[in-house]
Length: 221
Length: 123
Image (tube, rainbow over all chains, first blue to last red):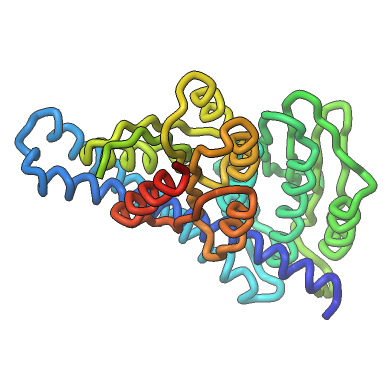
């Protein structure tokens, strides 16, 4: 097994672990909110106005958790379909949106907020979607690793001069990004495969990924 | 069963609020907080008879909070909550002094039984 393949498996594994953990939390919340309504009925408190309000709040929470689970499942489904075609046409902002949704939990654990600022018009590109998702995931991992305390990561897919640009803008205190470590090197390897230029502006704390509109030649794992 | 004072610690606010309400309906005195930092602050002012602590939280992790609790309140029983399919983290928590761990979603009767077992064992 090559180390690159291992890394791709690590990428899938991390996203799956994040997804399943979120789903457990969603199910736990639905379980307790539903259990609370059950308790109220079993104790015959359902006609008490104070408990009627609590029943409504619990029902709202259940509805919100179902929506949260549905969104996460859609994002995971989009990720699962990414290997359907080795090279295919994708929307940059939709692909980035899926990853940002699945990655949000990793950032939250470090008290870092993820924000996506995507244009309304489509940024359609032809690329290897699996490698592209892997690259964006590693870029987010690298970016997050530079945060020592709370902060924000703004992700901006844009039209560039000759292709598309993905800007990852960090804001927070005590930022310290390592441009010599394993993630940095992996990001460059993936960037080479995807004919994507990477630039890190340390003064503005902005990582820029310049993607071609169309990938030429083979891009393999 | 005697009524106990329980501190619940979980960053999933809706989950911990609903669980607190269910325990209160059963006569328990419950304080619910959403972070490890908050839990340690609460413990400085008011020590409960048991702590139910989520393992994965932003900021201080459950394991870090557990270690600090055990440094200051060695006999205070702590039960861990984990959303993971794996029991590895729960086992690690027990090595650090947790009484036991429970998987999410919870069965409330199992939680109550475990809390009482933990409190009895600590006395």
